[in-house]
Image (cartoon, rainbow, N blue to C red; front, side, top):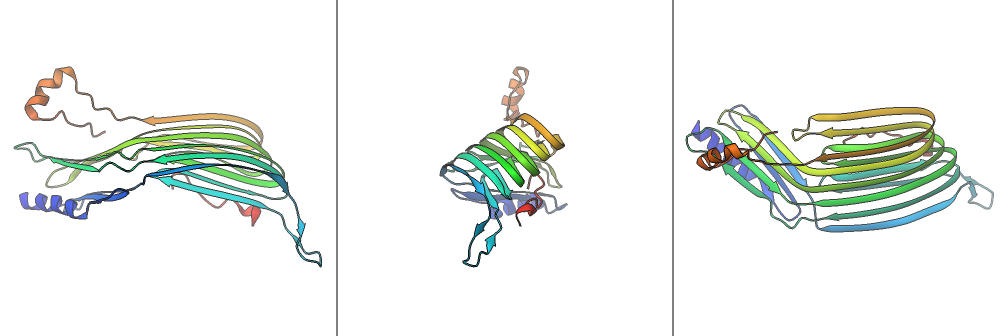
Length: 294
């Protein structure tokens, strides 16, 4: 048994690698095949983007013979920094269109990722911890105004397992104002294992997500959100669909904050045993929805 678990720890050390921007860490128990893996990637980066567009989506003649180019407008953006993500898609046919957008992204990956292994004397239980301090800040705002033949507009914001977003499909009139603010502070992972199995594995990303939307739509409007715990179990979820003409205002705020509080009555045990013990306590469906611009 002792040899088996020593091999488990050795394997975890061999497969783990860390740098200023990425790492992969894993624990594998050869007795029952249970395993835990995590891969992370970030960088020291800043993105500051702002812009606007206003115009008429209309046919234009492109040849002397009068060949007409069918009009459409399309735009997309994808951002991902340490699993703080923003995805946007817009496709529109003939009509009037205007939009404004601003994005600010800041990410840090200076700190080393720390690993610790702890096993109390006489105990068969190992506690393996991972501490990552690679914070991210993402603020994004966007407005859309459209009237015409058809527009599809979708966005999704994700933050380390949490997600929220909206889809406006087959609208002839659409106006919306959306603001999103996401924060990632740090990540702590805790794996508790014995010689025979991995008992638990928790990945705790301290994070917050705020999503505000104010819209007027004349087609299909889908609103969704999802929140997960440290074991990626869904703890809050919501899905709504509106078909028709609607004015919708929505605000979603999600937070997950790690706390490690030792009760006053436990301080003596903590000192004797050497630790108080930790509490082992494409995000949204993203199908094709832009056929109107094909």
